[in-house]
Image (cartoon, rainbow, N blue to C red; front, side, top):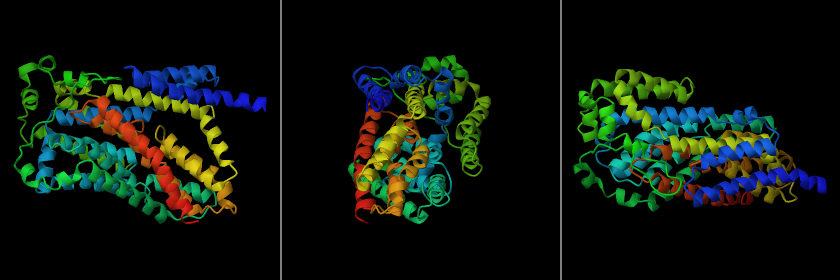
Length: 466
């Protein structure tokens, strides 16, 4: 017994350390990413006997490139007036029905993931435009960002999607009953229902009556961001990038485009804007149709835009969401250390071995939600479903099809967390908000979803069918 307790100690210490990071980052103005990197180093070396190379192996390089590439590319597009131009076209397309815009963004995100786009890729493409539109027309940015993320999750389990393919493959390999359409329908309708609730709660009803006012409202130029305040301050590098001083450093009055953008007088349809729009279309094609890495593609297209106008990219580089990137990559690295040292498997095995299959199913739903809020949803789906095989194959009363559908939704609906890729993209692209306050809103909503969703999904897909 004493030996078992000793084996438990490193796992418990690593979990307590994660909780301590949250407490410290909440009380003091310290970026949690720094805490997480230091925690990964200390826990990895002292408790898990990992080398520095092992710890760095858990650094989410793909996520880093995605965040850097996307925020830089869309900063370029915002600076040269392309996003303003797209918004004006969107206003004309919906004929002033601003209340329809959040649902259009939901639908586009769902369509992209349903036809094969990875969820963060769809969010990375749609979120910057959606949140730019939200800023211009005083739509709650939390509503718009969540509509985009829930839309991406709604389409995420179609039979031809990334999540769907992974889940169906794991289920088939485990020899469990397979129903791809049930999982897809569960994901779509649950996320659509949540989106409808959010729309009503976060100002959607007022938007439905705002048509006449919006039609007459001019489209102002969007400021990329404003200075933030409060704990874990995200800094004012983005606001500094909009000052005249930086403009002068970038070329001053010799660059008419920079001056026009700062004053909101950038004309529509310039050659540079057309080239930028073609670049955004190319981004979608290369990522969705050819499955190329969105980070590398975004950086490549951004480089082409920077070569067209080198002074513009200097300002855009200051607008990359560096503090957010530090936060997300640090936490992801720490979670990778936990996975490597077996803490995640330890918790999962402990739950799967519980005497009550129904309670074990509920706990697996919770573990899937909590871990996925910080780490890869794909990894969660691939690791937790096999843990449930023993009691799904026995006479436990837990239906395999319902459990898998509920597990799939529970492990992905929490991707609204600011520590997930989707949540991080929403945070990085929010305009005109106190980033710390917006971070807390995303965190609070993510926490509510993480606590409530597993219970509701467990009741719907496990308890009621039984």
